[in-house]
Length: 186
Image 1 (cartoon, helix red, strand yellow):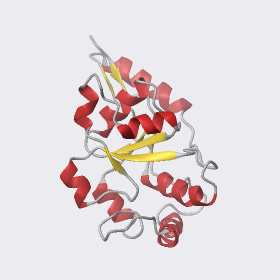
Image 2 (tube, rainbow, N blue to C red):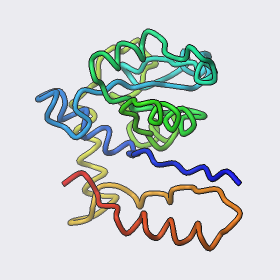
Image 3 (tube, one colour):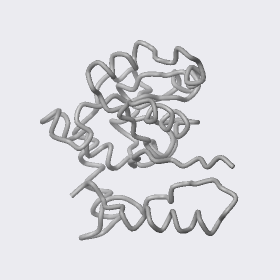
């Protein structure tokens, strides 16, 4: 039986916003370094709303022999980290990670992002740049009110999904993975 396990890194929207805010002052000073946002939603959803600066990538290309679009070729050449979100993003992230790209899954969807950061993060009014003041203000507000003092600024990470016939083996794998996991944002 084939065991499929997601072994790629992932982040949440708060970690991304923190990197966006930090990235503007020192582009290579964040954990993500020089990163590129990829939206793998359908073209219609992408045109309706997406994270500012995100590029659209058709997830159907991943199944083709020639999957590397201009965006991916540029990311490989410039050694950019791909931050991938949207419907089907975990499959795209897993595949690109296995093919040698620096790929990270962004947990959540557009509605979640909009709820957490209503201003400055998403397109919709023709914005082409992040509103860093609005993002920073909202980030600090969420940090102070939602998570409280001294707690790590992200919700508990979801368990990695491992599909196999043996659920006891899956539980052992998940416990081993969660024991090694440490938050990467100080």
